[in-house]
Image (cartoon, rainbow, N blue to C red):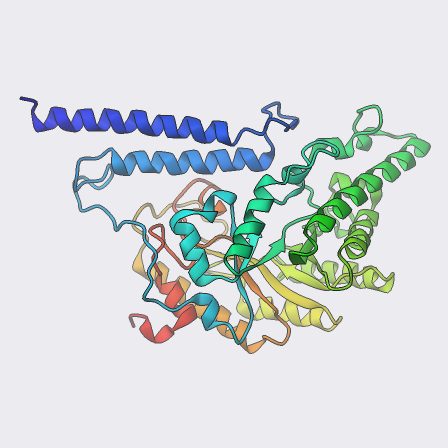
Amino acid sequence: MSSPIIKRRHTLLITLLATAIVVTVLLLNRFEPNGTEADGTGESPAAQQMNEMEVEAAMESIEQTAAPEGETAENGGQAAPAEPSVQTDIPSLAETYADYFPIGAAIEPFQTTGLKAELLKKHVNWLVAENAMKPASLQPTERNFTWENADRIVEFAKESGMEVRFHTLVWHSQVGAWFFKDAEGKPMVDETEPGKREANKKLLLERLDTHVRTIVDRYKDDIKSWDVVNEVIEPGDLDGMRASDWYKITGTDYIETAFRAAREAGGPDAKLYINDYGTDNPAKRDRLYELVKEMLDKGVPIDGVGHQTHIGIHGPSVDSIIESMRKFSELGLDNLVTELDMSIYAWNDRSDFGADIPDNVLKKQADRYRELFEAFKANKDILSGVVFWGIADDHTWLSSFPMKRTEAPLLFDKQLHAKPAFWAVVDSSKLVK
């Protein structure tokens, strides 16, 4: 008769083998046969990021399921953490804010099924694609548009009675290198001859115009809110404009081209936004203000500013966030919070709390979320929506940025259960004093 130890070893080996197969399938399923990125992997940047996230999730599954019953791989025999589940007996986040503004979340296509889909259906009424609608995801090579993942999110939103925001038509990252190559396949930025530089600029703007019009035309009946250009301001670069290939080749003409094409393709009802992070910083805010005012004076159809709002428990101040919104509202522009999350670390802190985040840290996060949303509600006349960059702590870009570590920036934990931050935003009377 086999001993319990041998049985547990057999279980461990079987689990490891099964999970390895899952990882392999995930990688194969995410392979983009039409991708031709410069790194030679055959995958778009979005696909590569998804591979990393899903493999990491699968490896976490190994650590939990490979341990003997009643134990986990890390806790030395302690009781296993609660199983992921959707709490049906708590208030809906979106319903709580129905009189103020819509509540959204960034998602990946794989989150449109299972428990995560149920969590989204309960708590949000707005969706944005975390990666599936970025330039390299939709047009990895010239005139080769790949719609499957974006369509999947749009269809899920329709089925769930939600709206969709588009992110993003133009960005300096996750964009195919082919955009910036001349007719001979050479990098446009290397060209020094004035005549050829002008020809390259014209070609790049034509490619951009086609990109924008094709996408907006496809989704104009389903999407009304659009991030047209993303992260174009960098105070440390020349003229305060990000020194991207877009800017080096066209100046600010690419911004004007993108907005005009989006308006013409989307019609007067489309809401067009310029989106950036760090808008609470006066230097960045003021340079963005100057750019937007310049564009508006030229008749460029900008409807609003997207404030990403990737913040932390130590800063920036809530007053600085609201002050920026007020400044742009003076131009007659709308404001959106487009990518909200709240790191549990200071920016220059490279420590790691590990599996057990101190209660005082979660309390500080809750207090800060409460202050933030009280300010949002008080300024609903200049703020028309709040989108979280994710929905629960089991899936957040901050888990690997600026380093790989435990992060918990959202309102729901890794088991999809409400954190103190959730109650701070929904009903602070339920918080433990």
